Length: 216
Image (tube, rainbow, N blue to C red; front, side):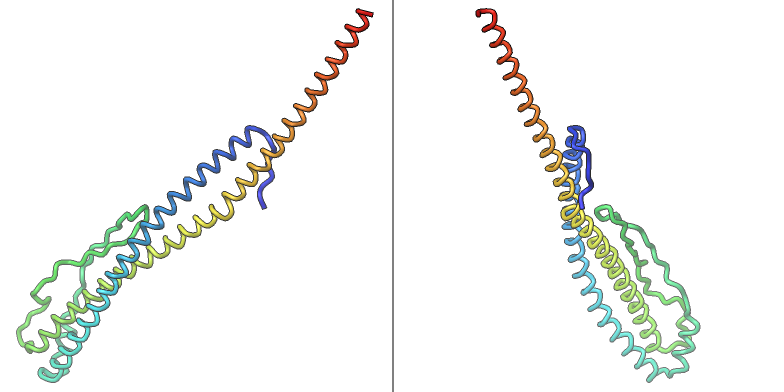
């Protein structure tokens, strides 16, 4: 239900200005939403590609692990796994996409050297270690892309809710107030004109009576 306001000219001018601002806001929000949707679908393609890459790298990594266990033995593979526990440094920065803060993960340059001594390590085990480093990076790419997708998707929903609120609630409410104020002001103006006509008619009648009395 629209808020009731005093039917004055100042309120009419105020509501007209509010309507302009609300309409401008809808236009800006729609542009933002359209831009975010375009960005979203671009990221969907990137996410699908990252998922496909993850599947391929995962198959290669686990096949390498199978060969390592078969050729070098599970004990050698496990020993190397326990000896090579290292972290992976990630650079995370925030991108500003149409006013939306979105995390961007920058993977470090891939190093061909392994973070442990290859001495006494089997060839198959070393290959498996390298493949699992690729797998780790592929996992990070998928997680980073889907995090951006989720953040932009949330902003699209939020922007759409704002557009709907303006178009379906705020703007109709202001428009109703403008019509109500104009109706009252028009009615008052009509009444004023009617009163002025009556006064004019009375003055004319009085002047005519005066002239007749003078002439008589």
